[in-house]
Length: 97
Ligand code: HEC
Image (cartoon, rainbow, N blue to C red; front, side, top):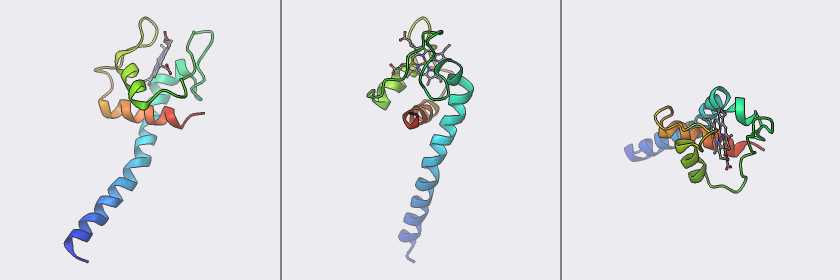
Protein backbone atom coordinates (compact mmCIF):
# COMPACT_ATOMS: atom_id res chain seq x y z
CA UNK A 1 0.00 0.00 0.00
CA UNK A 2 1.07 3.56 -0.66
CA UNK A 3 1.51 5.77 2.42
CA UNK A 4 -1.59 7.83 1.54
CA UNK A 5 -3.73 4.73 1.40
CA UNK A 6 -2.43 3.64 4.78
CA UNK A 7 -3.34 7.04 6.20
CA UNK A 8 -6.78 6.82 4.66
CA UNK A 9 -7.32 3.32 6.08
CA UNK A 10 -6.32 4.54 9.54
CA UNK A 11 -8.66 7.51 9.15
CA UNK A 12 -11.59 5.21 8.27
CA UNK A 13 -10.82 2.98 11.24
CA UNK A 14 -10.80 5.94 13.62
CA UNK A 15 -14.11 7.28 12.23
CA UNK A 16 -15.85 3.92 12.42
CA UNK A 17 -14.59 3.34 15.96
CA UNK A 18 -15.52 6.86 17.12
CA UNK A 19 -19.18 6.86 16.02
CA UNK A 20 -20.44 4.08 18.33
CA UNK A 21 -18.17 5.41 21.08
CA UNK A 22 -19.92 8.77 20.87
CA UNK A 23 -23.33 7.16 21.43
CA UNK A 24 -21.98 4.93 24.22
CA UNK A 25 -20.38 7.84 25.99
CA UNK A 26 -23.65 9.76 25.54
CA UNK A 27 -25.59 6.87 27.09
CA UNK A 28 -23.35 6.93 30.17
CA UNK A 29 -23.78 10.69 30.56
CA UNK A 30 -27.54 10.39 30.05
CA UNK A 31 -27.87 7.66 32.70
CA UNK A 32 -25.88 9.57 35.28
CA UNK A 33 -27.15 13.12 34.66
CA UNK A 34 -30.44 13.21 32.74
CA UNK A 35 -32.32 9.97 33.30
CA UNK A 36 -33.57 10.86 36.81
CA UNK A 37 -35.75 13.57 35.28
CA UNK A 38 -36.14 12.55 31.62
CA UNK A 39 -36.57 8.78 32.25
CA UNK A 40 -34.66 5.97 30.53
CA UNK A 41 -36.72 6.21 27.33
CA UNK A 42 -36.80 10.03 27.22
CA UNK A 43 -40.58 10.06 27.71
CA UNK A 44 -40.34 12.52 30.60
CA UNK A 45 -41.99 12.50 33.99
CA UNK A 46 -45.47 13.98 34.51
CA UNK A 47 -45.14 14.23 38.29
CA UNK A 48 -41.94 16.27 37.87
CA UNK A 49 -43.40 18.19 34.90
CA UNK A 50 -40.66 16.97 32.56
CA UNK A 51 -41.99 16.72 28.98
CA UNK A 52 -40.92 14.11 26.42
CA UNK A 53 -38.15 15.27 24.08
CA UNK A 54 -39.66 16.92 20.98
CA UNK A 55 -39.11 14.38 18.21
CA UNK A 56 -38.64 17.03 15.52
CA UNK A 57 -36.19 19.26 17.36
CA UNK A 58 -32.77 19.46 15.69
CA UNK A 59 -29.69 18.18 17.48
CA UNK A 60 -28.35 21.75 17.46
CA UNK A 61 -31.41 23.11 19.28
CA UNK A 62 -31.32 20.27 21.85
CA UNK A 63 -27.63 21.00 22.47
CA UNK A 64 -28.44 24.71 22.89
CA UNK A 65 -31.14 23.87 25.49
CA UNK A 66 -28.76 21.50 27.29
CA UNK A 67 -26.15 24.27 27.44
CA UNK A 68 -28.47 27.05 28.65
CA UNK A 69 -31.15 25.10 30.51
CA UNK A 70 -34.76 26.26 30.83
CA UNK A 71 -35.38 28.19 34.01
CA UNK A 72 -36.33 27.11 36.60
CA UNK A 73 -36.52 23.31 36.24
CA UNK A 74 -34.15 22.23 33.45
CA UNK A 75 -30.57 22.75 34.71
CA UNK A 76 -27.97 24.48 32.49
CA UNK A 77 -24.99 22.27 31.71
CA UNK A 78 -22.63 24.99 30.48
CA UNK A 79 -19.40 24.49 32.41
CA UNK A 80 -20.57 21.08 33.69
CA UNK A 81 -20.38 19.18 30.40
CA UNK A 82 -17.97 19.88 27.54
CA UNK A 83 -19.33 20.62 24.05
CA UNK A 84 -18.28 17.11 23.02
CA UNK A 85 -20.20 15.60 25.93
CA UNK A 86 -23.35 17.62 25.11
CA UNK A 87 -23.06 16.49 21.51
CA UNK A 88 -22.69 12.87 22.63
CA UNK A 89 -25.63 12.98 25.03
CA UNK A 90 -27.90 14.58 22.40
CA UNK A 91 -26.76 11.95 19.87
CA UNK A 92 -27.90 9.38 22.42
CA UNK A 93 -31.24 11.17 23.00
CA UNK A 94 -31.79 11.00 19.22
CA UNK A 95 -31.48 7.18 19.41
CA UNK A 96 -34.30 6.96 22.02
CA UNK A 97 -37.95 6.17 21.11
C1 HEC B 1 -33.79 18.20 37.51
C2 HEC B 1 -34.45 17.56 36.40
C3 HEC B 1 -33.75 17.56 35.05
C4 HEC B 1 -32.50 17.08 34.76
C5 HEC B 1 -31.48 16.46 35.69
C6 HEC B 1 -32.34 17.26 33.32
N1 HEC B 1 -33.44 17.85 32.78
FE1 HEC B 1 -33.72 18.36 30.83
N2 HEC B 1 -35.54 19.17 31.28
C7 HEC B 1 -36.11 19.19 32.54
C8 HEC B 1 -37.39 19.88 32.48
C9 HEC B 1 -38.35 20.12 33.65
C10 HEC B 1 -37.57 20.27 31.13
C11 HEC B 1 -38.73 21.08 30.55
C12 HEC B 1 -38.50 22.53 30.90
C13 HEC B 1 -39.59 23.44 30.43
O1 HEC B 1 -40.09 23.26 29.32
O2 HEC B 1 -39.90 24.35 31.20
C14 HEC B 1 -36.39 19.80 30.41
C15 HEC B 1 -36.19 19.99 29.06
C16 HEC B 1 -35.09 19.53 28.35
C17 HEC B 1 -34.89 19.68 26.95
C18 HEC B 1 -35.86 20.33 25.96
C19 HEC B 1 -36.77 19.23 25.46
C20 HEC B 1 -37.48 19.57 24.20
O3 HEC B 1 -37.56 18.71 23.32
O4 HEC B 1 -37.99 20.71 24.08
C21 HEC B 1 -33.70 19.10 26.64
C22 HEC B 1 -33.04 18.99 25.27
C23 HEC B 1 -33.13 18.59 27.87
N3 HEC B 1 -34.01 18.87 28.89
C24 HEC B 1 -31.94 17.92 27.95
C25 HEC B 1 -31.39 17.44 29.14
C26 HEC B 1 -30.12 16.76 29.20
C27 HEC B 1 -29.23 16.46 28.01
C28 HEC B 1 -29.92 16.46 30.51
C29 HEC B 1 -28.72 15.77 31.12
C30 HEC B 1 -27.39 16.27 30.76
C31 HEC B 1 -31.05 16.95 31.25
N4 HEC B 1 -31.93 17.54 30.37
C32 HEC B 1 -31.21 16.87 32.62
C33 HEC B 1 -35.58 18.64 33.69
C34 HEC B 1 -34.32 18.06 33.81
